[in-house]
Amino acid sequence: MSDSARFILGFVGHSGSGKTTLIEKLLPLMNARGLRVNVIKSTHLDVQIEPEHKDSARLRLAGAADVILSTPMRYMLVHELRGAPVPQLPDLIERMLPADVTLVEGYKSAQIPRLEVYRRESGQDPLYLRDSSIIAVISDLPRPHDFPQRTAWLDLNAPEKICDWLFANRTLPG
Image (cartoon, rainbow, N blue to C red; front, side, top):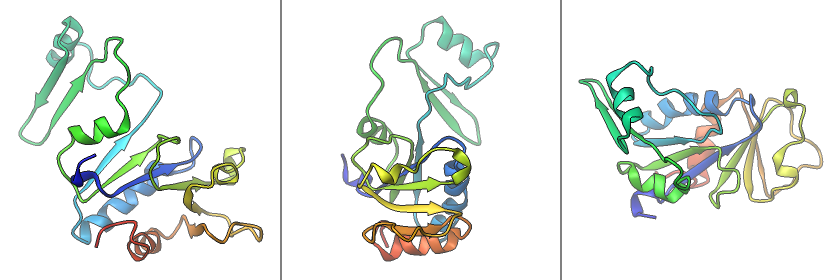
């Protein structure tokens, strides 16, 4: 991976735990501290990026490998895999413009520092019980008495404190 991807931080948790909502709250806090932040979100779903009747979708469906749709406000690149292997996380990071930090949602098996967002409402056991590489759990529950001391327990409802912890523990540059 390039130097521009030196700070990579993963967010994992069961569906509906609040990973995206937390990242959405952390982004302006990180930006306010002067960081340029990229985000990669993994999903197992086949999402519709643009309606099939739009020109860019028509060109993609006609066989284009890559389509860039450019507007005065933004651009997007759509790459059709067409049976090719799903790119690995380092390959995706390399395709992005350099940033101070890349936040990654999903990729539970990636060898990157990961934070677990956990809510009891998921009805499932927390991931940290079987994954000792999780560096912090972010939850709306109190810290369990038998929780491992080597792992931080952070309040899901305090994004400013989560951001402070990330900087204080050198998880983010700054």
